[in-house]
Image 1 (cartoon, rainbow, N blue to C red):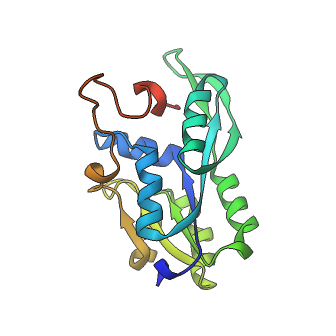
Image 2 (image 1 turned 135 degrees about the horizontal axis):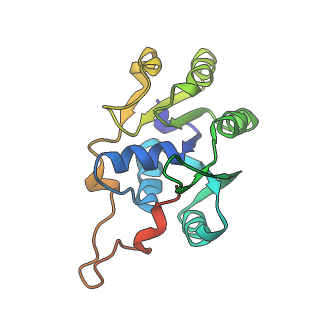
Image 3 (image 1 turned 90 degrees about the horizontal axis):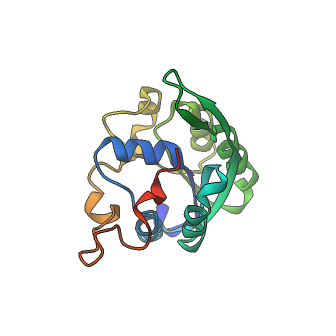
Length: 184
């Protein structure tokens, strides 16, 4: 049983952030960390994110919420409309850290709907180290992950548990400024 073991979570923050936003809500990472601890008994949660100097309040918030934040350098480029975009692909870092930490956990919880993690998930399953794969959006994820359906959990119905709640006095999301969860 996943809950009786030493579990570590490995989170693709960009995949989670964009998938949840696509559903029309904003993830409260602090509440999500507590949820992972309570439901999956996650002792350590590694959150992979692209680093942008102006997002220091976000990074501080994530660390205070209990995440081990792993930064990926970002590349700034202009899209077709000339708007600046940041790109920081965390996939390789997530795989690497999952394997670095391999001897330290009983089960890994992978949080992403990205099919690029197929071989990692397959390896963890084959070695009895896969706890769960948490998919941020049931309607948009790689069908490569369907092979692991007995391990899949979905975040679609978690808005009331881990979504931001409005603070009636200030009219902003509790615990932080409204712009904090727009790292891209």
